[in-house]
Length: 603
Image 1: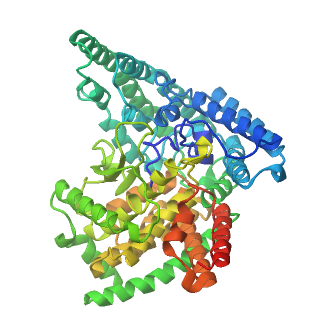
Image 2: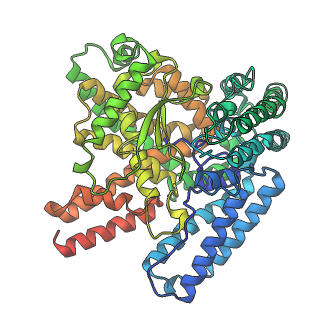
Image 3: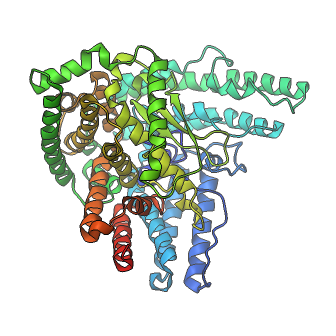
């Protein structure tokens, strides 16, 4: 999974838009198209430019992440009035877009128009539910995002540092606005479930830093460039200590008190999205958004049950290869408890992940015609969030920033991080999964800015899961246990279809969901708990993975049947990734066009 809070696709930074888009990651470059100017083209270009500027102004963190520094001294305004204003803007942009004569557009323009309509239509559909009243999930939120405000942001001048200090000074108001939204949600029955709050509380407790210097906010001031004179460095360090001590740390303390003393006692005692106000309609809209398909929760649930049954048969075949004597449950217990499957130190786990990543890197040219220039690193999940975090994630590089992409590996509770799933995790989060996918999209040329990292979840996460299966063809899985690890990851995503719809639409309990995952996957029980809590807090997102992968596999099979010996796997992959993130219906059209071209050319 791509980390939603350390990228400008934050699902919580602007929740009314996030659950509708995951806030676009774009590059701040002019849109130029090599075509004759038409009235429709000109109007579309003006609309896209205006809409992008509106997003930058409304979300300064988005602007920073794409290299636009004009707003580096600000945080978003998170008031209900501001979210209502943004919703009105979205509706106006959508109406304006739909008035443009689609028939008068070139093929590239039609694609740009359709992608922007996907963005705006989902924003407009989801805005009435006012998701900003829940501005955090089980492992992320505005309180976590704020700890990474300086991550990858270039700081070379006193002006850069002063802008960052101004952003830190804005944290109290930003937190107060989010608290007000949460308080309104509590009054209206729109809250996180109380059952999952202890894990969130643990993260908030870990963010009560003893001093400014011990907090992550002070990190940029430890190594101020020598190009600034001693007096300037001393001034900035003193200002940082003062701002963090007097503004930031008290804001975190107030949030902790609010969460424990006011929010938790008023949190709802149900877990399903259907139990929220207008919850059935809300969840149905989320299902459509996260899958990119016109499907119902019941249809997704049935798809999940079929996939669970199919994968289970494959798992039984792999168990037979190991020579293990015992039933399925006994094999899972063996995998969860035998020391041979676990690293003995965080360094060992990180080194194994790095070795796998580089091994895969070397095989990529056999499967892709186009590879990105951007590098990536292997890093541990930050310690303050690791206890309630998933096993690993990908953190994209900020455009124009000071670091590449990051493949995060969770080194907390090593006896819960089995090595037999590490190849699948690496294939998904690093290469050829999210890093390859995201870095290629950032390097798209001659497209509007919003195209560079538009992230429809079913496409993005579906590709990540497809990459895990591609690892079989690449020869990445070396032992039956690693093959079982891949299958347990695929089973995990199939189970998500069952448990997410089960909890949010069909009345399943949290324990029922945990038991279902424990019975069908070799995930550690700790990870099962954190994962189920994530699905409870973030309805519908977990559906994207398997539904997206099934569509990509379907399109590959269709292309292989149509082209026979002319099918070129590298060309197919380049087609899938060639236009950046797109909704699944658009991807289907692109693959059909590729098949038609390849068939006509005889190649």
